[in-house]
Length: 183
Image 1 (cartoon, rainbow, N blue to C red):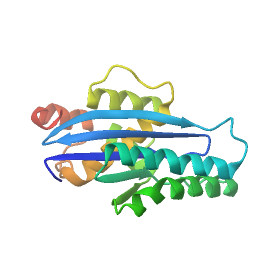
Image 2 (cartoon, rainbow, N blue to C red):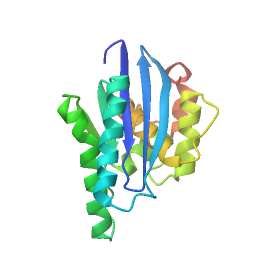
Image 3 (cartoon, rainbow, N blue to C red):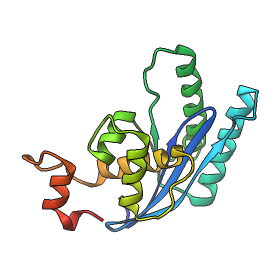
């Protein structure tokens, strides 16, 4: 990665979409912005998709991220929900594709594992770890924003750091043995 690098993370959704931008400066990580796009009052599903595209496009125009990391749709039992989520994800990425920004997709389990050390962590656990990693005080009223940041952090961890050393059983143990590698 470049010396200064911006990663946009997206937690796609058709009712609430979360996003977060992190700045990687050398080995330092900092939060640029996080937020949610709320669409529950918009009845037309295609109008929602248009709103997602416009908001992501505006974020990309303003912050000029170098990469985009997005949470992959999870495989549930409701096929209609999967279809809607896949459409939201595709529309969210269209602006990045249009501008030639590389896109990386991570499963919800991979993101949770990367951030908390537990692939089954709750949204609240992910939010607390994101808050601790980036050292900010407020947590968004919507956990979708911290899920967006978690996608960006997961991408950073996957591409910037070697895997945990053999013999290390947990993130707590890794942090204890490697205090210089934790920001």
